Image (cartoon, rainbow, N blue to C red; front, top):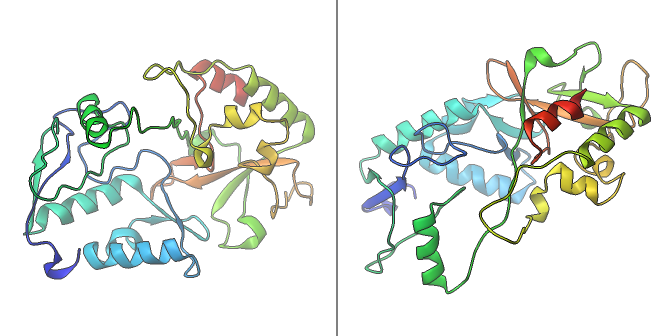
Length: 275
């Protein structure tokens, strides 16, 4: 994509803000609607390395580094500043024209690259189905919760990264066995948001909601997003029974995302699980 590789691109990169989706909140390109982590920042990770090379070639070194938030060995960004930066760079590119309109038909003339989602519009979904001959190409995702920093009890939560790797960039909320049992029970009894678009639920196994993980066994969460390994609670001097990690969401540090958590339960049940 660097240099003269792009001769001319007339791209309807986003139908927003002409037509919004339930997940997006802005008209910015590269708006991150799930985790603000762009995965590992370690050079040994091939995907991370190749991603950095491609991003740096097109957007420059400032695309991630200038909007990075503390996240240990992961590369996480302030989602608002990151989206604004990417939008400015693409708008300023002399060989890219941004067209703000909904794509309702796929042109078969020339080369068309379809990169769509999350929440592709019904019209474009139907066009992709006609083109591929498949009934549906989809999976169900869930909401990645964000918590206000001033709601975190710092007398209980402690700053640390697993195995001391990457400094004290995460806040860790420890659970003892009794607390975990109460949380688990509230979770499996919670009512989920009704899923309306399709009749069959197909989860993406690498992005499961915690309610679905909980249904697979009482200890599934403790070996998944709530695993306590590599953490020592300074109040007890021991590894907690389970733990929720919080990662800084923005440069203002007034919000945190729950690492590995995706939820489908309704708001009232979310509060009940946290009591």
